[in-house]
Amino acid sequence: MTNERGIKSANEVYNTIRTLLQEKQWSFTESQKNNNLVIKCKTYGDDLPIPFQFYVNTDKCVATLSSPFNFKVPKSILEQVALIINAINTRLVEGKLCYDIIEDTISFRSSIYFEDSLISKNAISNMLYTALCTIDLYNDKLLSMVQEQISYDDMLAFIQAN
Amino acid sequence: MENTLKTKKGLRHYRYLCDYLAEEKLVYEKNDKRLSANLAVATECLSITMSISIDIEHQLICLRALLPFKIDTEKSELHALATATATNIVTEGSFTLNANGTICYKNTFSYFDSLVSKKVFAYMIKCAIMNIEELSENLFLLDMGYSRISDFIKE
Image (cartoon, rainbow over all chains, first blue to last red):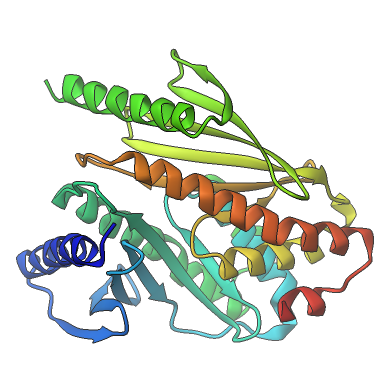
């Protein structure tokens, strides 16, 4: 794909994301970094705030949704959290939880590849909705686990039940 | 009406998948009933088999591949750290550890009312090969005790 076509497709996807967020009346900030068109936004789940960013890469033709969880994982429960993240990722149909064991952080990531494709508003909406539901389901439970309010076994049981 | 559109779109994407595999002269076996294709790719070091399917109902393209070895289930904590790290490193897809010692790479694409090109299949397959080739050796060496988790993370 020529860069011009890539930029055109990326702008279409980017504008679809903008329109979607505007329709929801969610405030967001926009920026551009290297080959990425960036939208940063924040919403609220049942319990915790959910910050998220869209990166639309004009060169690679990939739109990525990324949402960092707002807490750090203590090194003392590193292995347990890794097993829990593995259990969650096994069940997820779309997207993944990313555990950075150097930075002790967890984030959710999902992406859409759009080269030569017609990506609908519903696809972007579904990507966002799925991400927010997944994050809302697990972020408070993972925080409780990190704060030692939920045991490893209870967390595992919760994952298997949902 | 909606179901007809979903089916039409799903069948069209399955045709694109098969066309792409044929054009690239890849070795594959298709299943028209399941709208899936099993494909074998040999790289310099590995033989990778993967399955790609179209889920009409959920409007998903699913790619799954099992790594060509089993790990010692006694070391599940160590391998959970490794697969979590691998999942964090790769831009597309995730690695997950199964109870029977297999490690699965999976990547899904939700096309929800979109019309995707053959390039989506090319991208998914290339990412899978690249990610599996890059990380399976590390996971294998870790299991055999020839490397440590700290070496894995540094790479």
